[in-house]
Amino acid sequence: MSLHPTLQPYADAWTHSIEAISELVQPLVEGEWNRRTPCPGWSVRDLVSHVIGLDSEMYGDPRPIHTLPRDLFHVTNDFQRYMEMQVDVRRHHTAPEMTSELELMIIRRNRQLRNETRQPDTMVRGPSAPS
Image 1 (cartoon, rainbow, N blue to C red):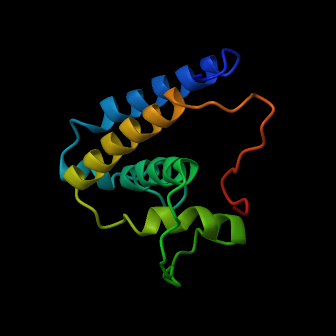
Image 2 (image 1 turned 45 degrees about the vertical axis):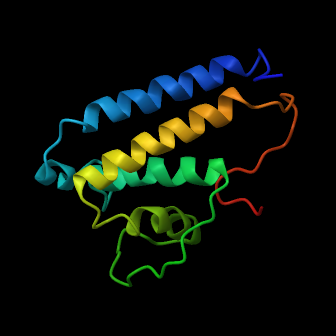
Image 3 (image 1 turned 180 degrees about the horizontal axis):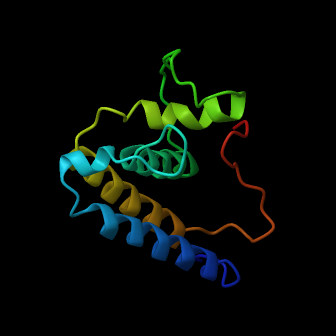
């Protein structure tokens, strides 16, 4: 059995969104990854890191062991610290490292979603929830 038919539109929306992000960042040169965004303290690289990190957690990968720097003034509460962890571990990754990791995550999550057998009412782990 594969993905329940009522869940398919959500999987399709995820696929459409993640592929659009990938298409947007593929042609960027290294310096463009550092552009500021409307998200306080986050660059383009940071936004993509956030997407990779959340999908990594949804896939079931363990969270990185990492200590956040103390000078991240845009991080003011526990939820922001939680979200920042996946971002900060990738903050110095190169453009090719970022696009490669994003592409790998797309492949892994697509395969996971395609092979999903749970029913729509099954509780699943979400970001910042205990495993």
